[in-house]
Amino acid sequence: MSDFVAPTVVKTDEEWKRELSPEEYAVLRQAGTERPYTGEYWDSTEEGVYACRACGAELFTSREKFSSHCGWPSFFAPLADGTVRYLHDNSLGMERIEVRCAACDSHLGHLFKGEGYDTPTDERFCINSVSLKLRQAGA
Image 1 (cartoon, rainbow, N blue to C red):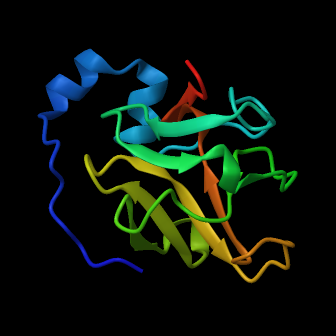
Image 2: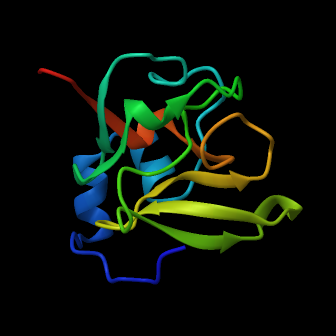
């Protein structure tokens, strides 16, 4: 897990509200969650790089994306060390690891470990589609 590094993209709450849709704001800035099986990328197999919808920082690639059948996009690793940061999340009566964009500190989703997926890391970065923007390969 990476150590905290101060975000490089810093905006006021009012700036985020102007730039993001109400749904994007609720998830990215207020740590909300979109409903499962409703997001744009939960079952996408398109190739490319997934960037933070709030600031554009590159976070994950389609090479690390896998089908976990959980209703949200799942990745077994971020694009590189330092692209995401982790916080302990004790909300909803359970211990989880929150995943945030290292560049702008926006909420992306949660990290789950040891679930038995046949991936190189046995980690599942369960990320909200609304937190991401796919930059298709070759586009």
